[in-house]
Image 1 (cartoon, protein in one colour):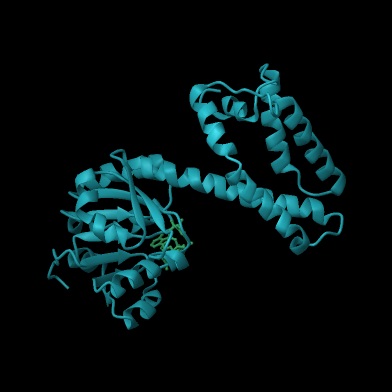
Image 2: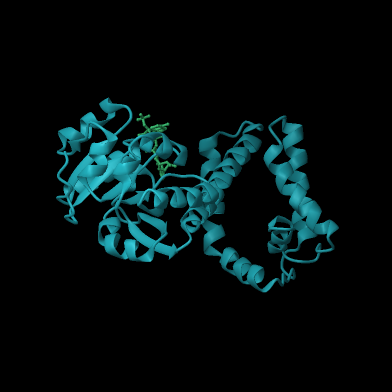
Length: 296
Ligand code: NDP
């Protein structure tokens, strides 16, 4: 497989977990020549049956296309995979769609550059079953020219939002979104356990939990909070930190009495406590930001 394909309709995908498989399927359906490699070779079987070309080695995979997508558990996996294949990285665009910290992402941009490759960092914001479908989108950062060249291809897996040259930026956006997602999921589970301690089933509580998630976006609370955070002014005329902090305390105590895990509500209460101690009790809840942000 040494005939390098410069053709824009060729892609190499390394990493065939659910995301890699989903992306490979999208590109096959779009008529791309899709080259694949995966550590566990058997995982390539399904996609090869659909028409993908299996590379026997990483060097072959890199040789098959200049446009290379990585979909791995983390960036460490990339170093493991490319060890010994560094020469084959020259002139390649590596689009790494794996999760990791912004720092690790920046380091790997430098490492890839030292081997003649460019790194475009991406974070896809939908689960595998939605890749390439309505509503799918991802964040990208790194060299703008490389993004522009491959934007049309990237858009096939979802809307492609370019957020800047710093390779860490896409990872910041990605982790920030997952921060909301994971914390919200944990909050839902905690709330379900709290009400469940009184014998209420998850199914019975579900419509109320959904209503809360819905109303958080509908009432414009976040839009208002963003304005307050950017201005550093936190009017608390409608609902202040002392009132909400009292509720945070009630949730901790109700959880203790219910005998359920209290780690999550205690963390929230701590932020209210800090904000009140800092003299912001009469401010609005977005003022907790002052206790969370850098150098707070
Ligand atoms: P999986 O964990 O299922 O697959 C990860 C891939 O990484 C596999 O191909 C695996 O190889 C490979 N891998 C892991 N460690 C190593 C290593 N040390 N050496 C070589 N290969 C390695 O991940 P997903 O497909 O679910 O996710 C891929 C990325 O996409 C992740 O970063 C994830 O955060 C992100 N993501 C996932 C979503 C999802 O719904 N699944 C949604 C949005 C983003 P092997 O098959 O041999 O184990």
